[in-house]
Amino acid sequence: MRAVAAFEQQPNGSDELGALYAGVFALAVLGARDTAARLHAAVTDHAERGGTDPGRYMRFAGPSLEDRVKRLLASIPPVASSGTMAWAEMVTLFTGAAATLSAPS
Image 1 (cartoon, rainbow, N blue to C red):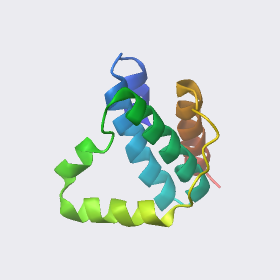
Image 2 (image 1 turned 120 degrees about the vertical axis):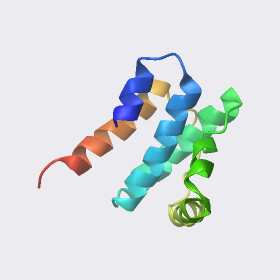
Image 3 (image 1 turned 60 degrees about the vertical axis):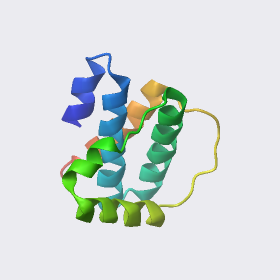
């Protein structure tokens, strides 16, 4: 969540997409699979339109993380396209879900 907040203050959308892409996997691991799927669809859409690879930093973590990411992506439900999610909506989707998941029970 801190990375997304930091990148919101900078004009580097590619790095912010990378942080949100990592957030997809955090949400999936924490059990918010539907939200992870929606976020993944939005991040992928924005990345394709912007000509960037949001997963480019994952390679630095090594092949074991890349394998886990591939398995997680295969396990989240597919999302039918309902148009492009606005950037602010995409950020709010992640930060809202992260805040809910990190709130004490």
